[in-house]
Amino acid sequence: MKVTSAEFVKGIRGTNEIAVNGIPHVAFVGRSNVGKSSIIANIVHDKSLVKVSNTPGKTREINFFLINKKTYLVDLPGYGYARVNPTEKEKLQKLILWYLTDPTIRPKKVVVVLDARVGVTAFDTQMFQILTEQQHPFCVVANKIDKLSQKELRPVLEEIQLAAGGAEVFPTSAIQPNGTKHLVESLFT
Ligand SMILES: Nc1nc2c(ncn2[C@@H]2O[C@H](COP(=O)(O)OP(=O)(O)OP(=O)(O)O)[C@@H](O)[C@H]2O)c(=O)[nH]1
Ligand SMILES: [Mg+2]
Image 1 (spheres, protein in one colour):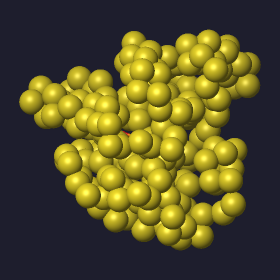
Image 2 (image 1 turned 90 degrees about the horizontal axis):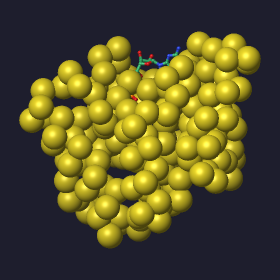
Image 3 (image 1 turned 180 degrees about the vertical axis):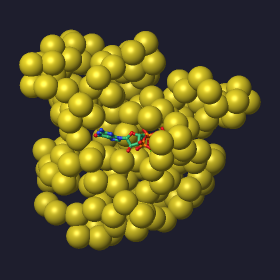
C-alpha cells in the first residue's frame, strides 16, 4: 500500500483524547538523533510536515500524523540525549514512559529506531524490556545505513537481531528516496 495522504494532526504533552480515539497507532521511539522524524518524513514524502533538525532533542511533543485517513504515525521525542537540560530531559522521559505504559494506549506497532553506526545501546535494551513487559508488538529499524558498507552492516544487523529477540529488523536510510520501502510495506500492508 502507498501513502496517499498524510496530515499533521496534533502534538501532545500528556493525556489527550487523540491518543485514545480508536484510530490505530504506529509509534516511533528511539534515542535522540537516530532519525525518527526523518524516517517519518521519508514515509510521508513531505519533509515540511515533520520537524527534522541537526539539533538533537528537536521533537519535544508526541506528534500525531494521520496517514491515509486511517492510521496515526506517532513521532515520540528521543530518549537519552544528555545535552537537553535535566528538567526538560526528565519531562520528555516521563512523556515517553507515559505513552508506552498507559493501559488505555495500545499501539498496533512500536518501531524502535537505532543508528546503524552505533548499534544497540543500554537505552535500547531498556526499551526492548519495556515493550516486552507492556506486550506491545514491536520491530526494529537500523537507520543511516548509507553511512555503512554492506560488510560493516552485516554484524550490526546480527547484533540487533540478537538483542531484540524475535523482532523483525529493517535496515533503512531516511535520506534516500526508496530508503524506507521495506519498512513502509511492512507497516501499511
Ligand atoms: N546520513 C543520514 N542522516 C540521517 C538519516 N536519518 C536522519 N539523518 C540525520 O540525522 C539527524 C537527526 O534526524 P532526526 O530525524 O531529527 O532525528 P530524531 O530521531 O527525530 O531526533 P529527536 O527528535 O531528537 O529524537 C538529522 O540531521 C538528519 O538529517 C539517514 O538515514 N542517513
Ligand atoms: Mg524527532
